[in-house]
Image (cartoon, rainbow over all chains, first blue to last red; front, side, top):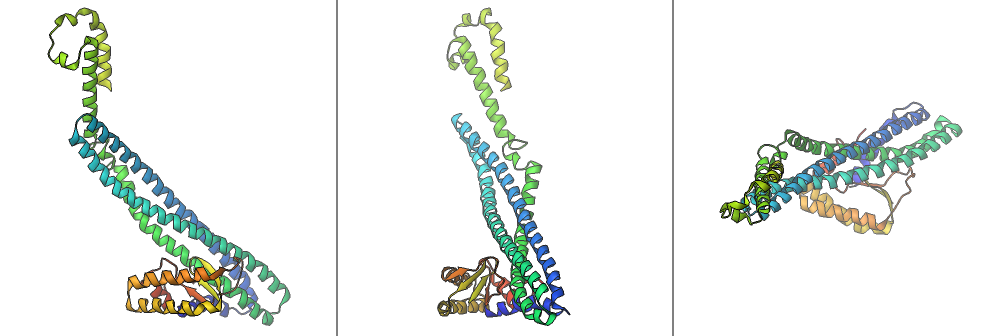
Length: 260
Length: 92
């Protein structure tokens, strides 16, 4: 791995060799350091934005997934195993996507942390370089300054190379994830994921459950009104109970049942 | 001797630890040459781990350059090859 170090150093020092008066390169380099500091901070912000986007998507998918679980439970409690199975099937598709998002989230968190630390290290070194630069400019002639500047340069240049690379790698990783996140956003926006439980195709579970529960409500309220079990309504034996007296009350509960 | 792990920072490693680290380093290099992903991942992890364990972090404001620069922990063989060629990965 020694070769990496040599190549790194050669790159770092090439800027220094081009300068006439090495003292001039101090200010130039300092400007570049500040630019790099801005760049790495922007990198941190970019990664954080991507992370938040993934968190948002994760929450949206989680809501969908919880809804499907609730539907599956309701379906089962109503004896509709077929509906429960359908809800769970749709949920399992979301579970895969959730796991994928979770993995991306972990990776982005790692990148964010790394870049934050890198920006702290660079900031400390830039600060140190600034002090050294002022000392060199004030106390040395161009000829004397050469060595001192070389010393100050090599450490900071190496850091700049390292940070530059870290920002680049983080950008590459984030970009790859953004393409996938974009696809999920489109899915969410198009309602294709919602479909699984609420909009067109998916609404069938909700609609059927709603229909079943409103029907059940009607039956049970009717039964309550008649003071008998639901079975008794299916086979009315006492027409005396459906007298005019409770009929006025009967309309209200039935409407309520249909609305729900 | 000062060692930089790219993406992590610099550490001061005592000279008497270098022999054992050099041994792992040779494994990493041969894995890069032969393109053996598994050997590369495990040996690089061992090398970085060895450096982290035997090294002491350099102060953040130090302007010393490193004697040895090591690839980042999540580097791929391809990335290390690019580092060794001197183009692509190192900006500037």
